[in-house]
Amino acid sequence: MPLIDATQAAFGLLFSGDPVLWRIIWISLKTSIVSLLIAAPIAVLIGYLIATREFTGRRVVIWIAQAALSLPTVLIGLLLYLLLSRQGPFGSLQWLFTQSGVILGQILIVLPVLIAFTLSAVQAADPRLAETAVVHGASGWRVMLTVLHEVRFGVMAAVINGFGRVISEVGCAMMVGGNIAGETRTITTAIALETSKGEFAQGIALGIVLVAFALLINAGMMLLQGDTRPARNM
Image (cartoon, rainbow, N blue to C red; front, side, top):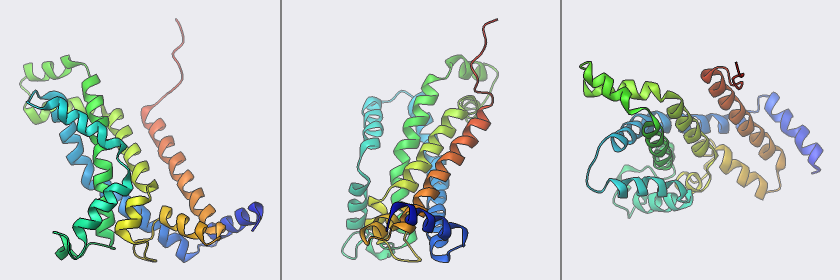
């Protein structure tokens, strides 16, 4: 199918409300958002503690967190497949080829992203902020909330990058989810499947959705940050 025809067919699928297409989009959104909601509080807390505490092996922990950013998602998928298969130690959960398994894989994928970004944001914060809060009698939780509020844009950037990573990954979702229609077929696994079959219209339509997500999320981030124009010299 020529590119122009395939693109026209893709927009036709999007605007016609094709149930198969929108089911795929819904599964991708659902699994990505749920994994972020679970992973974000844990990762932000871990990132904050690593940035603000001195302990034996701290450099090793930071090195592992940063190295995990470059782990291939298919490797995480392989590990989970072995753990969740019938012969694996967690086979009794019966999460393999289910949305729960996909969500678990996405949690493992996004945790290093959130930890590393939060760690960097907190380390870049003015240390006098926490010191001032302590002097005024703030509890440990209150100090943490104060610092995280100060670096909230860095944390939001972590969440946005995390969302982009999980919704666009294909290796783990394919291995753990099995690309089952109506159950675990996500945007990326559907694109891979349809392209391999020579059906480009649905792949293009789903690619358009991914680009739209990226544009909308980053536009929202810019609005939250406020005016991005460079300051004028007075």
